[in-house]
Length: 266
Image (cartoon, rainbow, N blue to C red; front, top):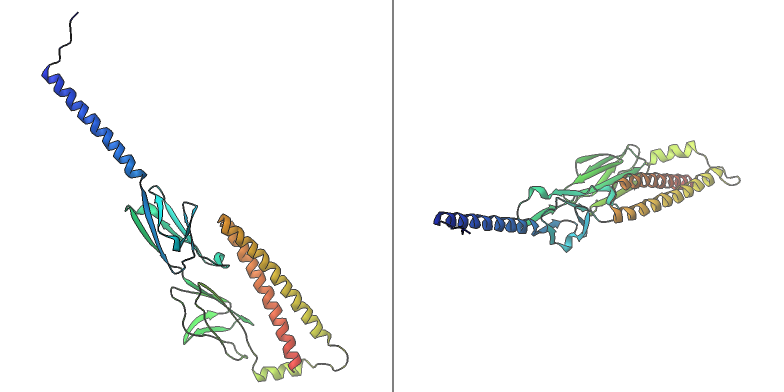
């Protein structure tokens, strides 16, 4: 039986083939190692207690950063803290555009100022700058430092501190000027005989509106708790609707009590 004899050329070809095979396997292993490496996520924010989610998974709060995340992660979502979380849109960052091992995002939220007045329609000013007509929401990258001033024809101007939180709710009950008070006195004569059923009815309505305000606020808080656990965006519209209903009921209550107070004063 003949034995196979390897020529020098055959042996050289086998060595070269083995070298390339080992080289290709090494590249495959190294590529898999690099792709599987975690990378560091660092966040800065004006709300250290804001929640952080990576691809829908809860990571912690901003103050817990840095986080180690998978290299395959694609999106970071930062949601603001507090009971008014639904009023402020979350911040989203695309990890797919980042190729470095350490990623840093600035999760700076805007400062929101919800400004309302009773009655509505008042002009809102910050210094000499107009911010709109109540009810209105003003957004700014930095907190306001000056007093917020409201002006409405027939009422005395009102001022209130702007606040330094991410979400600030400002509400002012406008006080009628004396000339308007005299008109109210002439139009609404209070009878001295027997109980004043107008005051009683308005007061009862005001308390009923107050109860409704508490009811809607409680339902909104319950949905907020669900949103904080599940993060479902569908709950935001329900929370906004209930909060608006609560605000309307609260406004009716305040208007009713203010009406009764004016009648009693006159």
